[in-house]
Image (cartoon, rainbow, N blue to C red; front, side, top):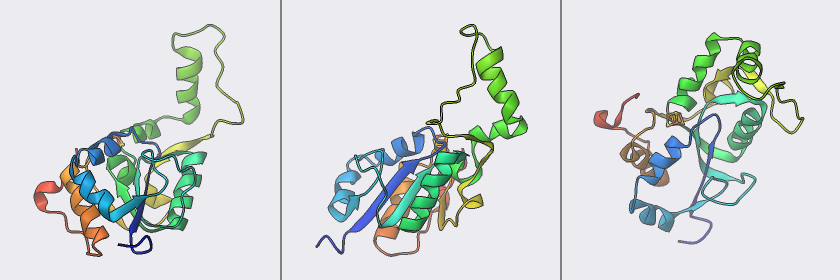
Length: 181
Ligand code: SF4
């Protein structure tokens, strides 16, 4: 298979816990089959800093800060097929529980009220991405092509969707592979 016909995959974690990537790695020795057919672009598994043109983008985590929005838009621009991987990417997941509270009260509680160093400060270095008022699922920011549910999705579910997409088939998840916890 020449470089041109090889499928190129990018992955990233936004407001995620890396659990979905860990579940992806749980495909175990099937990784060897996968790397015979695909190349990895930007991903926590590579050292590539900027996402390039790809066939498939897998994204775990919702959108909780300005950098997440930037990275998500870059993935959408460069990935022909974008996949929301896991509960956080699909509906904000557990991190979206903070949506019940005001951002100001969360920052105040964590940095100023809770026990910790005296004279605490809410971090304000310009290098830090500004948090958003609410945590959002991916589809509220960009178009998403496929969703793989679960927290995390099982390795078998990820494998099923990936192998279907790599082969150019419409992904079909068997009922036994669909769960939301
Ligand atoms: S869906 Fe679950 S495993 Fe995946 S990033 Fe969110 S919290 Fe982690």
